[in-house]
Amino acid sequence: MSGKSASDYAAWKTLEQLYASDKARLVLKDLFASDPQRFAKFSREYTDSTDPKNTFLLDFSKNLIDDKVFAALLALVKEAGVESARDAMFAGEHINTSEDRAVLHIALRDPQHHFSLSEDGTGDVPAVLAHIKDFTDKVRSGAWTGYTGKRITTVVNIGIGGSDLGPVMVTEALKPYSQRNLDCRFISNIDGTHLAETVRDADPETTLFIIASKTFTTQETITNATSARDWFLGHAKDKAHVAKHFVALSTNTKAVTAFGIAEENMFQFWDWVGGRYSLWSAIGLSIALAIGYENFAELLAGAHAMDRHFTTTPLENNLPVILATMGIWYNDFYGAQTHVLLPYDQYLHKFADYFQQGDMESNGKFITKQGKRVDYQTGPIIWGAAGTNGQHSFYQLLHQGTKLVPADFIAPATSHNPIGGSLHHRILLSNYFAQPEALAFGKSEEQVRAEVGANASEALVKSKVFEGNRPSNSILLPKITPRSLGSLIAMYEHKIFVQGVVWGINSFDQMGVELGKVLAKNILAQLGAPADVKGHDSSTTGLIHYYQKIRVE
Ligand SMILES: O=P(O)(O)OC[C@H]1O[C@@](O)(CO)[C@@H](O)[C@@H]1O
Image (cartoon, rainbow, N blue to C red):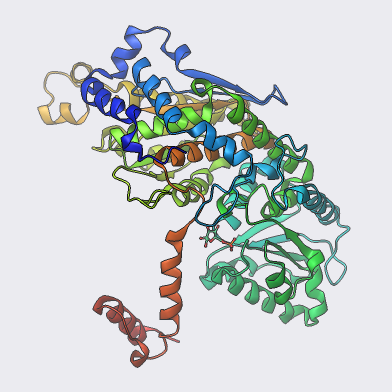
């Protein structure tokens, strides 16, 4: 890490100059017309070095770049010291400086110890994986039964943030690989509705609860876990039965055993696993239960292969680096505020939700590692939805809005559900190909006039013009499998890492989530009567008083 402010880098100033001097020239219609080789020049194929079948394409040619801009972006990555920062992360250095922790989610998916690591706990990863395999094999085979001897049919993961979003996204994405007689459910919100609706039709005799919490102190999770245990004991009566229906995933053994879960029913991970990077750890237990340990191991292997790509591939061919630089170009020079993720795959419908935490909790920061306030934009707002649904929701803004929204289109060439002889998939893919084309090249006024005829009003003609020149990346995989999904997720993790290094921020703490928690705890104690409400502004006071007036106990 250079320790300099990003805007002080020579490459940053070059990019500012290029933006000022070349923006008007960076028009995709012209850039493609002038270079028939543009697609070849600005697309890269990723191949898993440990499984050549795991390969996919990144086409970044529909970005507002040329050779000069791309070179300057790569120079920025180099000048910011991304390569040495990357090597420091993979060496287990405590790059999470505010918490004095290593950042080693890569160790969770490196069972062969390709990256030689000495950080406490990294040597225990294989043992935890073995525990996960043993347990999930038993539950899925029926060998592990509930207190009345029945096999487990329902798994309820209780967790929030990184202890929920990763398992949710991956179990949805890999549903084709799941054992359909094991219903995996998730409770995250403290809103009693989430628990009530999740257990409404569950049978306590055949339900397994997973209490997933790195700290085992998160108020929502511990409250939900306690209420779930009360629900269970309301039926099972004997506390001894908890042992067959509750397991814990945490770094905090003391708190787990204090809750009443035996240590042998705890799956451990470590403080060098960030919550939003933890699906590869014991937090992935619900994933392994859903898809089986072998497929979970494939997920890990795919991520490890991307780790190998990230650590060995030159910057100009390095997929996480390319995605990171494209994002920086729009975020810091074009003034884009958001980035949209558009997976054309219904199984990936939670992909954007997952990276809302992954990206925004990592890079939504305004202070650098040196304690300086940035004078440039850092983390973008991440959002998105599965295609083609988004087209019938927000694509109007993408095509004709006043905001620049860089987009990532993601699709598998082959569906798990070739309905109608794959007619459905061909229609889905035709949209996956068409939308970036429309965004990039639009529809000119003369094309509109030719369509609507001479009698059309000027207003109508103008309203039908698509200015185009709206950038996107296209990622095309053969199929969404455990291994390809592992590589895809890891690619985005490392993109986030590269951007954080360029911006000089700590991508691995989350100070910003603490204030709200403290204020909420203070207010919780004041919700009884109006006289209890003290020390707030008139709005907060007024709102609480109004609630106290209208609530029905
Ligand atoms: O896993 P746990 O310790 O219960 O934390 C849950 C989530 O809460 C946070 O907001 C941190 O407080 C996320 O970073 C984290 O993933």
